[in-house]
Length: 255
Length: 276
Image (cartoon, rainbow over all chains, first blue to last red; front, side, top):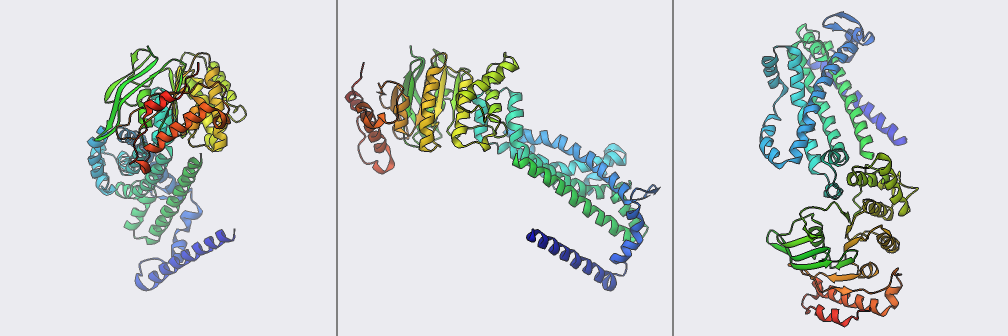
C-alpha cells in the first residue's frame, strides 16, 4: 500500500515537471504555444459540455472521442478478423509462410499516411478509406503474434491431439485455439494501440469529425489551445484502451 | 502370429542412426517393458511401435496389419502427463471418450469419463484443472484418459518417471490392477529407465543397448505371480536376479563404463530359470 502510494506520488511529480516545461516553453520560447492555464480556459467549453453538438466540427470532446472510438473499433475488428486467420495460416503452414512472409515484411513498415491516398483511390469515399488504412496498419501485430503463438504450441499438446485422434475441428477448438489465445491477445493489444495512432492521421486527411479531424481543423483555424486539448484527449484515451486490453490479457493468462 | 510384431526396424535422424535391427513381438494381453538408459532411443522405438513415427527400415504389424498411423485401438501415456491445461480433469478424459466413441450419446460419454476418473480415485477432484492437481493426480487423470477409450493396446512412455518414489509405487499398483480389470486383454508396451518398475509390471523385459544404432537384447521373462508387492524385489530370488542382470547391462551401457565389454545377454537370459 505504502509502495503504490509512493508510485502514484512520483507519477504526479513527473506530470508536474512536464507541465512546468510546457509552461516555460509557452512563456519564453514559443509565444504561440498556449500555456496550460490558457489551454484550459479556451477549451473548457468542450470539456464541460462533452456531449454538446454545436456544428459539424464544433462538438463536445465526448462526442468527438466517441466518433473516433467507433471508427477505430470498426477498423480494429476488421484488422483482427483478417489478421487472426492469416496468422494461423502463416503459423501452421510452412509453405504459406514462405509464400507470404516476404510480402508481409514489406507491407508492415508502411506508414498510414502512405496507405490513405490508396484507400481514397480504391473507395472514393473518406470513411471506407479511413477504415482501410486503420485495418491495414494495425493488422500486423495480430498476424505476427498469432503466428508466433501457433508455432509455440508445445509439442506435447499436438501429441495429445494425435493420440486422441481428435477431428480437425476438435483439434482446432480444443488445442490450437486455447494454446494460441494468450499470444493472440498480446497481438490484439498492440493492434489496438496502432489503430488508435492511425485514427488521427486518417481523420486529419479525410476531414471527418473526431478527435483527429478536430485537431486538424483547429490548426487550420489557428486555435492552438484546441490542438493541445486534442493531443491530451488522444493520450488519455490511448492510455485507457491499453490498460483495458492489458487487464483482459492478464485475466486470460491466469486461466 | 503375435499380436504386435516389429521386424528388423531401423530409424535414423539425418546421419544419426538411432535404432537398427530391432525385432520384438508382443502376444495379446502381454505386458512388455523395455529398459534402457536415457537417450538410448527408447522413445523412438516406442513411437515407431505405436505408429507415431515411421521407421526407415523394417516392418511393424499389429493384428497382422501394417502399422502406418496411430491405431484407433491404442492409447498412449506420456511421461509429462500431457493434459490440456485449459480443460478440467473431467473434460480432458471426456475429450478422449468423445473422439473414440463417436456414435455414443452425450450421457454415455459423460458416464464413461466419470467412471474411469472414479476408478483412479479422482471422483472428488474431477472438476479441477491440471494445475490445481499434484503430479501424481495428473498422471492419474492421464491414466484414466488412456483406459477410458477401452484400448486393446497401451503404449507407456516412462509413465512414472516424473513422480516421487511413494506416488510411483501406488500408481504402479493401480496401473497393474487396471490392466487386469479391463474387459478384454490389454497388451502393453512400456519403456522405462527403472528396472524395479519393469519387474513389478511386466511379463517380459528387454534391454535396449546404448545408441547409436541401438538394438534390443533377448527378452528376460518375469514369472512372478501377481499382484506383485514392491518388497518382493528385495526378497524374491528371481526378482533379485533379473534386476541384477538388467542393472549390470544398463550400467555397461552408460558412458562411464563405455570401455567395459558388453555382457552377453543371451547368456544372461539362459541363466534365469523359467518357472512353469
